[in-house]
Amino acid sequence: MAVTLPEGLKAVLDGKVFVTVATIQRDGSPQLTPVWVKRDGDDLLISTTVGRSKERNLRRDPRVTVQVLPAEAPYSYATVYGTAELTTEGGQELIDDLALKYVGAKYAEFNPSAAQDAPRVVVRVTAERIVGQGIV
Image 1 (cartoon, rainbow, N blue to C red):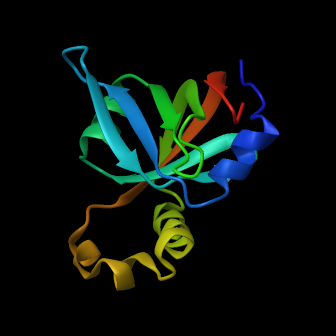
Image 2 (tube, helix red, strand yellow):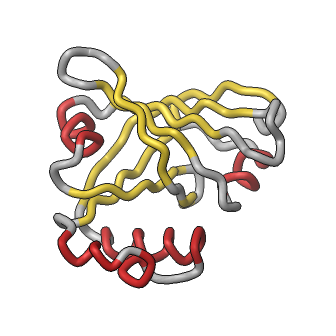
């Protein structure tokens, strides 16, 4: 069942915070990646490409954990446990929105090699449980 993000966490996510995404590899071990994030209501949006570990892992097992560690509040954190839905629809728009948020330019301007990227995938994380301190 989806839960509502606390206001403090929403405020942090709306800033330029990096998050760490954990997915489950085929052998059961965790696969961790630092990523950009965007909030859509109470859902988290993350970008990846077809064929990357995150994408393959989440298609096989949609359970995901996102850890938020705001640099300006080093003793605060939130861990969001949830389920991911994946789609390629809106993938390029999301990576451009994220790049504008984090670096002030569209993704292809920031990363010219992006022209060789596989199709972009939107990972929509619906929170089912949130733990933490200071921002939750």
